Structure formats: C-alpha cells, structure tokens
Amino acid sequence: MTTTPKRVLSGVQPSGKLHLGNYFGAIRQHIALQEEMQCFYFIADYHALTTLEEATRRRIDREKIKPADRAETLRENTFDVALDYLALGLDPDKAVFFRQSDVPEVAELAWIFSTVTNMGLLERAVSYKEKVEKGIDASVGLFFYPVLMAADILIYRSHLVPVGKDQVQHIEMTQDIAGKFNRTYGDIFPIPEYRLDKEPKVPGIDGQKMSKSYNNTIDIFAEGKALQKTVMSIVTDSTPVEAPKDPERCNVFALYSLFATEEEKAALAARYRAGGLGYGEAKKMLLEKINAYFGPFRERRKQLAAHPDQVETLLQRGAQRARAEARKTMALVRQAVGMKAASMG
Image (cartoon, rainbow, N blue to C red; front, side):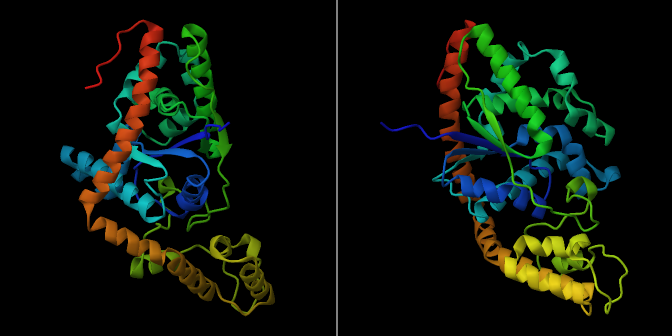
C-alpha cells in the first residue's frame, strides 16, 4: 500500500531583492524539501500589493513615483524572484512553482473564509500591528492578509508549511479558520502544521537581523564592486589589528560561518583570538566565500534572464498544475456551502 506524500506549501513576497537572510533562513530549505515531499511554492504577488508602495520607494524616490512605477515594481520584483528560485536550484519538474495571481480561485476561497472568520481573530494579528507601526498603510488588504494566507495554504489542502517564527501566528490562524469552516460546512480541509525554518544567525551589515526593512542586506546575486562595497561596509568594533578579538561578537565572523566548514570556522576563530587579524582581512575572506558559493548560481541566473519567455512558460506550467488542484478544492467548497459548481472553462 502506497501513501500519499505530505504536501508542503510556501510563498515568497516579491518585495525586493532576495538576500542572504532569505536564502539561509528559508530558500535553501525549500530547495531541499522538493526532494522529499510534494511541494507547492508560489510568488505572492497578491500579498505584495499590501506593501507595494514601500517596495516602490526602494526603487524610486517618493516624490518621483508615478502610477506606472508601482506596476513595474511588482512585475520586476516578481520576475526577479522567479529567476532567483530557479537559479538557486528549484526544479519545476519536482516542485509546483507559480504566481499566486495565476490561480484566481484563491481569492474566491479567501472571501468564503471571511464569512467564517471572526474580527477578533484578525485584530490579534501581531504582524499587522507591527507593519502599521512601521508606517505601512493600514489598508483592508493588510488587515485581511491572514485570511488570504489561509486560502493560499488550504486551497491546495497542504499538510506542512515551513515558516519563520514571525509567521507562526498566521499558521495558527489558518488552523482556526480551517477548523471553523469544517465545523460549519463539513470536513473539507486538513489542519496544516507549521515547521519552523532553521534560522541561523544572519546579521545585516549593521548587526541587526538582515532585513529589507532595515536596509542592511547583502543581496544573493550582488557581485563585483557593488558586492565588495557592501561587504566592506559591515559594521565592526574598533579593536586594533594586533589585539585579540571575540569571533562570537563579530558580524563578519557570523556571516563567514554560514559558508564555512567546521574546520574553517575553527581556524578563523583561532586567528581572531590570537590577534594580528584585521577586520578588513576577515571581510575579504567573507567576500571570497560569497563569490565561490554563489558564482555558479549567478551564471545560471544570467542564462535564465536572457530567456524570459522560457521563465514565463515555466510559471504558466506551474500555474496550470496548481490551478487544477485549486479547482478540485473549490468544487468541494462550493458544493459544501450550497453554490453551483464553477465552470471549468
């Protein structure tokens, strides 16, 4: 007797250039999971609309933004995410890879879920409050975000959702929404579980957590002088070259450790403690590691970027597979709530 593999779902917002924090915190694990489970990965362009103004400002000064700039930002960022994931090893023959907006059924399911979701549940969302505090517009879409996320997960009847700690509450809300729907209309949805992404320490160049919000990132596909300038700007203390240094308190060492073997980490740590190693030399060692690790991926990305039609074909193929599953779910949902089955045209 064969068992159906667990279905995994994860999405990534096209809100700007992906960085080392994204890679070591999530992307690397997503790529590995495609070898073990049935994976659905989507580019969350519906969700990105809630923070599109902020993403556009990263490209263009606030005073210069035109309506067309917002649309171009979303298109550009979405294509960049597709290139990044494909270049880093996502195999569209193994994982279902698609744009969220190419499966419009998810918006219909989100509306149906809104009718069984209490306001109090959404009002407790920490992520919403934090984003509003950071100056993001308190739109209905931002408030509604957890319901759309629940639809993203449940429309494919996913079992497992890899997330960071900041997204655990959203998965718990998804569990609540699925349970309420099942109690109201009958068992349609499995109750998904979350799996915490293994989040190594990925400091930004200023020592805070690497994040686009802090403008402290090292982009995955940066190279040449731009990458060198970023790496050499990593904040360090003022300990003289000849003095011993504590590797555990150094941002450069923490980043180097992401790429190094245990032996390499031990050797560099010993040099730190012995004295005689300047931070400039350590930064050059980090730069070499980044170039060696991501060099082959860069070449693959350039090849993909030269053939955008092929990338679009891969996304459309993924959307067809995803939409076939979404339509199966919506047929069950529509029947359960008393609606006519949707046309499959």
